[in-house]
Image (tube, rainbow over all chains, first blue to last red; front, side, top):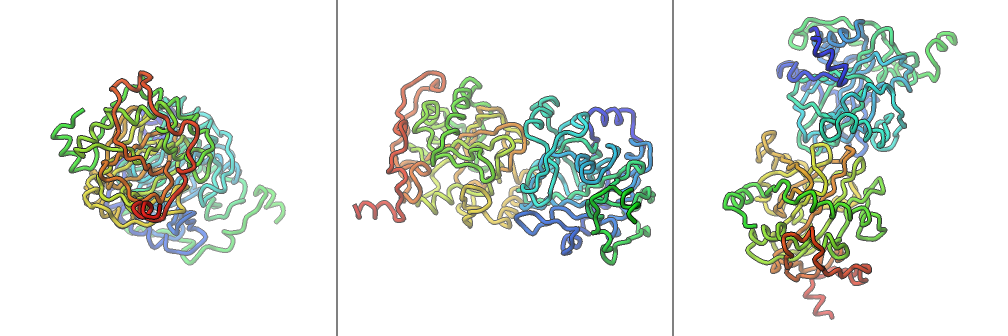
Length: 293
Length: 293
C-alpha cells in the first residue's frame, strides 16, 4: 500500500490520514473477540478506569495474543508508516483502549510525542500513531478529536496530569488549545473527529494534539493504538516499564495481507507471563546503563 | 405560535421538538452577556462543578435578572407549551446550565419527571422542559442527547446518584438505557442530539430520557433550561429549597414578542437577595404543612 502524493500532502497539512473500513468485518471480528479475555486478566498491563472496573488501556497484547501479534505485522498498517518515514519501524507502544459503554472516561488534550520525549528520551518526532477501530465509532461513543495542523507546532508545553483520570498524561494547557483550535478554523474545522465502521484506520502524527470525550452511550468504542517508531529513532531511556515503552528495536517484518484471516505462526514471547525484567526501570539514559553494567 | 398537527404528532412520537434559530442573535446576546455576572455570585443558587470552580447550574435567575425574567415570559417559549397542555403553566424550575469550555462535566442519563415526582411530589407528567441555547451547540461541546420515544415508558426505575457529579440526580440504570436505545433504533437513530446556533430551542417531554457528555472543547455551551408545569399539576411537597423547585403557582403571563429587545418592566422579587423562607424545606406534603400551621 503506497500513499499517493495527495495523501502525503494531506498528511503534511492536517497531521492525519483516515482510511474508513480498511479492514473487513471478518478481519476485525477475530480481534474484537479476543478482547474480553485480555481485559479480564488481573495484570499490570491492564489499567482500569478511575471510577470503575472497566479497562481503560491494555498494553502489549501483541506479545501474548496471537490475533494482535498478527495485526502488529499487518502490511496495510505498517507500510504506509514506512512510506511516510522512508525507513523501517519497530513497535514502540501497543495499546487496546477500552472506552467502554457507559464507563469510558475522557482522554485530556495531549500530544503523544511529548510523553515519549519526556519519559522515554525518544530523540525526534519520527514515530507514528495508528488507530484501528474494533467497534463502529460515532459521535456518541467518545470519538477521537484532532486539532488539524497542530503537529506543525512541534512539542508544545505540557503539564503532568496525575489526577483527572487513572492514567498519567502530559496534557496541554486550555489557553493553548483554544489558540490552536482558532488557528485551525475555529468552529469551521478547528476540531475534527473521524468516524466510521469497525475496521477503519487513522494514521496520525505523534505531535498532533488530540483528546476524546467520555462514552455515555451503550456502545463500546474499543480501538487499537499502535505507535511505530523509526528504528534509528529508538528510545534512549527505560524509565517506564517495558510493557508501556518497548525495548526491542528490531524492525517489524510484515506478514502477508491475509494475516488476520489465516493462522500464520507468530512469536509470543510473553505468552507465559511478562518477564521480571519488563518491570525493571532506570532513571538514566541507556548508554549510562551499559557503562554501569 | 401554534404548533402544527405534524409537530403535535412528532412530539407524541419522539418526545421532543427542535426549533433551530428560534431567537435571533440580537435576542440571545442580552441574555448571554448577563451570564458572567450571575455566575460570579457566591450564592446557594450557583452550583459549581465537582473538580473546578466553573458554574454547572445557576438557579432561579428569572427572579433576580431582568433579561431572564423577560425570557421566562416569552410567548415563543411559553405558547407552544400551553398549546401542548391546553392549560396555563407556571415556572417550576429555571436553570442556566454552564457546561463551560474545558470544564463542563457530564449529566448522566436521567428523566426530569422522576426527580419532580420523587422529591417534589408533582402528581403527573404534565410539566415540560424547554432548552434554549445561548451558545452555538455542536458535536464537540457536550450537546444534549435524547433517546427518542423513551418518554412513552413513563417513569422508569432510577437510583439517586450522589457521587458522579456535584449535583445529585435520579439516574437510569445502564441496562435499561441500552434497551431503550435499541428499541429506538440502536445505531440508527437510537440516540439523537439536536445541534444548532445560539437561539435554538428544544421542547422536550419531562419523561424523555436524556444525558450530555463532558465539554472538552474551547467553546462554552451555556443553555437555559426552563421547566413549565401545568398549574393544576403543581408540586405537593417543598422538600427542596425554593430556588430549585418553585412554590409560586401563578400562571405565567406572556410579554410581547419583542420582549428580549425592549425593556418591558418585570417583577424581580429576589433582586435584593433570596428570602430566608426560600431555604426552608419540609419533609411532608404541603397539605400537612397547612394543617400544622
